[in-house]
Length: 148
Image 1: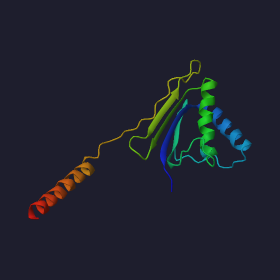
Image 2: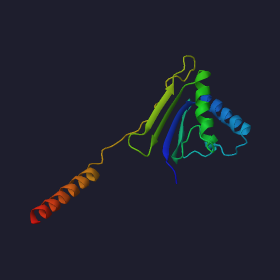
Image 3: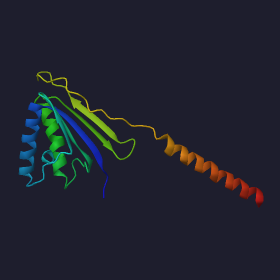
Image 4: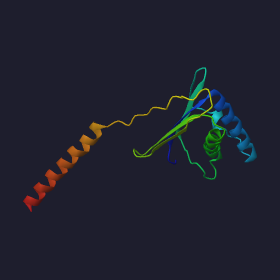
């Protein structure tokens, strides 16, 4: 089954072309056929930027067998080296597992890319149900202690 994440990336259109070329070449050098950029779960674009990503993906950067992920992560580093702006956000299954990083170009026309927006919300009903269960459990234990 494995641990899954939701991933979103924003690049300029020029940056996406660079990223796409880098990923294709990287995968070709590794004799890998599966290119994540050809299997997006989500994509929105306008005249100057692309917002794209995946839901429920095994995002294991640097792990053997996940070259398609490593290709994208290294491709984003390459964008920064070549002064192309990008934004990256990943939300893992655990509430405290999320990461964001970005690069802001000094030269590129499309410097001010939108940041991926994500929200962690309180699930009050879930927490309250456990609190109530613990209260009921404690009441039963007190009754048993008194009875004995």
